[in-house]
Image 1 (spheres, rainbow, N blue to C red):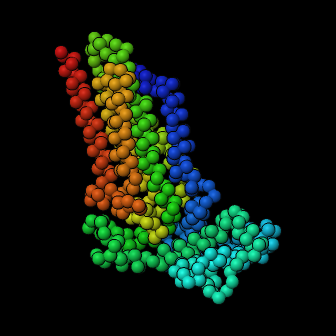
Image 2: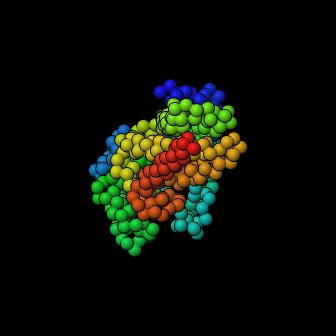
Length: 430
């Protein structure tokens, strides 16, 4: 135990820990936060879409049943209209442009859109359902006061008005389209079937027939949350390479290896170093996963922890039948598995390299390869279909293929470590 604690201290030295903490902080602030967390928390159409979905969950629970759609939509619409009118009345600039209530607000929006339309092509445009009908004979030219109002950013940044638009023009349409999409997936000649193996098609049918499709989810929120997984996996890999790689190489450079072999206890050092690296990898990965997932939950995703992963507002379907709380736990376990595999592969290169230059030459391609594999693995975890590219399952038609890949990485790490320890044991005998 004393040797284990000593090797752990050699890994968790103050300077490497400081470098690791700074790297993790910069990585989260510069990469993870802007890509995945900021769009959920800052004022934007994405955060408004997330807020709308949270309002729906607070009102109806995690699913939207058919009998709830009409009453819930009316209640939310009325609330957003009242909130919008309260904002309009609080700002005297609106009244100067003739905007005094929600109806006149939407009328000005529609007038602005209609003023930019070629009358001959008007029928090709898909205008919001609550706009007044387009009249090709009407003059939609904006007055100077209206033009000035349209150019104000606060005119377009009224959050309840945006949520009202999403509710009535996106969410309800998506829900009403469930029977159409279901029919398309049952039709083997439809485009939706293209590139989906038979097992995936059966799972999609279960999602519709079992009612999972009625789950309330934020389309854009889910899209940005998925962006966290590969970025977090890459952060863990780089962190472990920074922290663990020098351990055995440093002993070579300090001529400690021959000294360790001179005693019976010292000959066990290599195995203990491996266990110390595995423990440090587990510790670092758990801390980084906890921090990033904690930020995710704090950003508003706590409302979705009990919701399933397949909803009527999503673009993709998922194999995972549980809720987001269970899903995040599974993702965390897979990332810890990858971290242990990374530690064992790092142990190999730290053992065979006699100086930091050669260690760097080995570690850069290894970490890059691991990062690429993990990025693709965690890009759409357990997805049946992808957003803008094919899911991993569509390339390798094995359900939960991501778990098999992480398991394979761990087995490779175990095999490599066993070989290293066996070779080291022969070196002792020689």
